[in-house]
Image 1: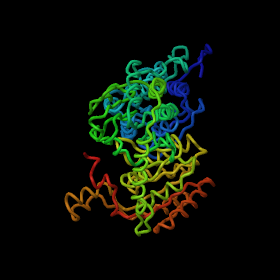
Image 2 (image 1 turned 90 degrees about the vertical axis):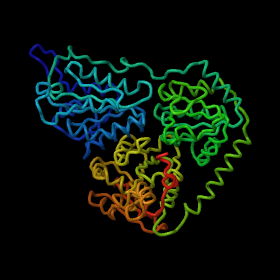
Image 3 (image 1 turned 135 degrees about the vertical axis):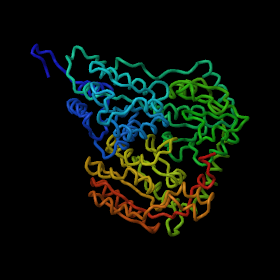
Image 4 (image 1 turned 180 degrees about the vertical axis):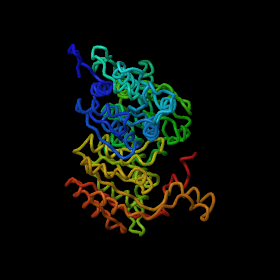
Length: 558
């Protein structure tokens, strides 16, 4: 658009899209609304793909999933009022998991401020506690500038989400391009690769080098800030047994001499030097109480506030994970720890031997442990595994081992159900050549499963496996133990839904499995359907009287 003087004119929506493009955003996830259509126009002009879904929570989770897959921030765009409130759970999940993403929400025109306009709510006030940055864009001139500012904040220290609300008239208004503040790509942000204190790096390197029984836990931040290579180098150079947490799973492949999976509790109990990288002392770590109280504890994190929270440490290092690990590896020396490795490896083999009868049982109804084992046998080198649910996913974590970095996705510490379908949308869109396998409970799938239709419509062939026990089982166990059968089976039993038929309604491939011997053939047929471009659901009926160990011990609440 231009004026009579031929000066180029530009709308707020077009400025937003230009800022997204400068940030490297190539797709937005969205559900349409009248407040945000000007952003769509701008995205089309900039060649940014628009993936529309059926619920705003799905859009927000998909932006989170895109960031997990690519290492760069994701973006969701939703309308005002209920559009934004629907997306809050996705933002909260990204906040707890430290995922960089931007949610853009619509807002009524500034001219109608406080007048009771359609879908007017105090979005910024609601978003501030669960974002690193939340603001209203107050002028069309600042649209691109504010988008750039919001993206900077997503990578300030530990990563996380930002939120912008943009009033409808701000997006709709045209201004001369010369008046717009339009930051240029690569010129408005610094490198996030800060280095921790060199003196403490040397202390940590000396401590690790002298340790007889060290171990390291590699967590979420290792993958989030794309530090896989540095983590591998650190483990190999200093000869340390490594355990993998969250998105860091797959950093080392199954069978790697430094990769350990089932002996973490034993290692934490006996180790004389424990390195915790990129994961907090939260409930998953027993708030730090599961570590040997006499061990030296080195904590490495991108957020100063996380270091030493809930548990005292010996050394705390704040900085970019990759740079910090590389510096320690270069400053340390490799030590022979054959006896320690042999002890842990023997423990791994013993633990697996005890589990094998459960993993391979032919009992009917099908054990969720058998399903988990079959899924692990099914994985290809290029399979991205997504877990969504309670016990079915907790159990699968004991069996499923991704074969490469970036091939594991789960909700993270907020424990949000329903993330699976949107994560699968993002994973397949970001990595179309990879096989995407989503394993979820029937309760979790029910929350966002309507967007199986998005798989079909956007030509995103994903293989979905539903572990169907017709119950919210992780909660059900605690209720039964506390109140008995009569009161325990209240509010947690679901209907027997044939999700294989659900797939067919939308034009997908669907199969039902009731016997363990039929799992692998059904998975293989579904794989062939997916290769041919058809999304698939394999609905596996599992035993609802089988529970994960953590559920039996209620460790999630301790």
